[in-house]
Length: 203
Image (cartoon, rainbow, N blue to C red; front, side, top):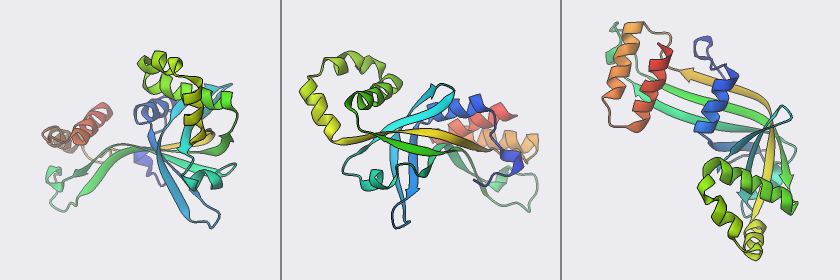
């Protein structure tokens, strides 16, 4: 990912917290014809023996899984973003831009076919997103769960690299950044307000 030096999002703990907070990612790879394919998926994040692992599953009808095993893949996690008006800059000779926060995760996918391992992926997903559902989940009949399992392809992704960008007007003056923050906070759009919070932390 192209990241200007002013906008590098580099602290590992912060990157992981961002992924956990924005865990609905876009997984991308090239298929057999080298055509890019992508699916939006929720991911559970785990550490196993010091290795960062992402877990999720495809619908079996989604053929992306057929071209993904042992391939290098990219998962994009996007955070808040917003249009930045040049009215907030001190110089008249200014143009609009877009501020945003995003993390790219690279790694290799292994498909999971064993029932117990698939259940581990589903359990990890439930524990990550909806712990209160656990009791109901565990009470479901085995036959029902097995039918559900037949309709998915579970996988894990071993992470080899993480890159993050925080484009938050770090190249502008403090006064300009404060004006941008105040402008964003005045908007009703939730993404604008969340971006203002990120910018406030960077002041």
